[in-house]
Amino acid sequence: MGMNLKRKLLLISFVTILLVAILHYYALKLSWYWAYRWSDIPIHILGGFWISLTALWASLEIGHIDRITGYKRKAMIVMLSCVILGGVVWEVFELVANITNVSFIGYWSDTLGDISSGFLGGLIAYSYFTKTKKGKPVECSKYHVVCALGNPA
Image (cartoon, rainbow, N blue to C red; front, side, top):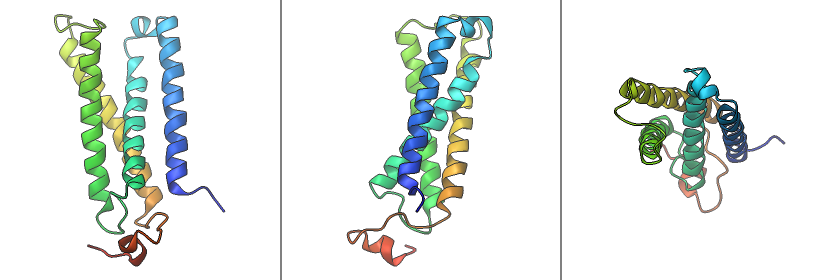
């Protein structure tokens, strides 16, 4: 028997954030962010992937996305709201921590690029999630009557 969807999402999410942490550590230690202007793009893509996949996992866990129909729309809303919120919170953190400054040349284009990269990662997570879920209810229990019956409402 293979790994169920919830565990698989959680495992991939954990591995992704671990990869982000390792890459970020080396980017700081080896000055990649300053030597290679583009080096933060993969980190933001992975960050968007991580936050979206984690939010989608949490949505499954609490039963928000448990019906056969309508799960793609719900998943898209979860992904969009988490990527936008996460991206904005990260950019505010960078300002508060004096990592960046709005007076820097290229600040706004860099910020827009960071959020767009996170959005791309979110789209990848959404695509993976919807292709993996394929409209199937996940681990219905006796308490998830709607899920077990496959009610399309």
